[in-house]
Image (tube, rainbow, N blue to C red):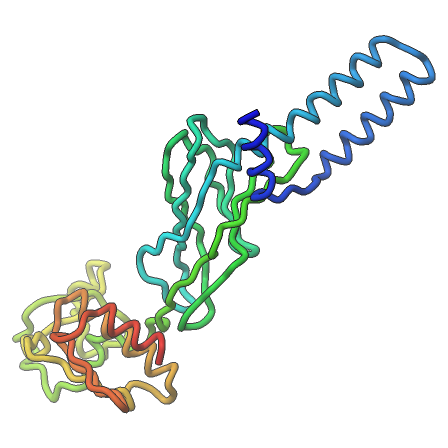
Length: 289
C-alpha cells in the first residue's frame, strides 16, 4: 500500500510520453491477438500475455527509476556572452537503489548523466553558449529517462530552471598591446628584460628574431612596461559603442585579475577601484550596465 501511494505521488511529478517503441508494442499486441484469435495457438497466447506483462511493468519501473530524483541549478564559474560555458545542476537520488539512463535537458540542449547511485548527489554539467550579457533565465529544464525498455519517455521537470548572470564577451586589444601603445619609449634595443609570446599585435620592431630562427616567435619586453603602478582605464576610450567598450574592459579586468595588477575604471556615472571592489562585483556591474 505504501509503495502504491508513493507511485501515485511520483506519477504527479513525472510527465510521460510515448515513443516509436510504444507504437511497435501496440502493433505486436494487435498482431498476436489476431493470430491467437484466428488460429487459437497456445504459444501465441503465451507470447501475447508475456509481451503485455513486460510492457505493463515497464511503466511503474520507469516511474520509480526517475521519480526519486531531485535536481536544482548549482551555479559554478563564470559565463560570458557568445562564449562556450557550462551550467551545473546538482542531482540527488533519494532512493537506495541506483537511477539508470538519466539525461539532463535545458531547452533544446542535452547532456548524458548516466547512472546515479542510491543516496548520491551528482553534479551534471551541460555546455551552453548564451548570446548576450545580462540576466539569463530558462524554465524548460528537466531530467529524462527511457528506462527500462524505451517504450515510455519519462520527464521530471527541474523546479525553477536556472537563473544566472552572463558577463560581457571578453574581447578586444590585449592589455600588453594597450600598454605598449601608451608607453612613449621602451629603452634601447639591446636593453630588453625578457621574452614573451607573440600575440600578433606587436610591431615588427619588437620581435626577437633569434627566437624566430628557432621556430618560436617571441617579442621583447622592457622594464618600462612592467610597471607596478595602478592602471587607469576610461570607459569612453575603450571602444566605439557600449557593447564594444564593455567587452574590452572585461578583457582587461580579467587580465589584471590574472596578473594581480590593481586598476581603476572611469565609468560615466561611477569610478571603479579594484582595491575596493572584487572582480566579480565589477563584472556584475558590466553585465547589468
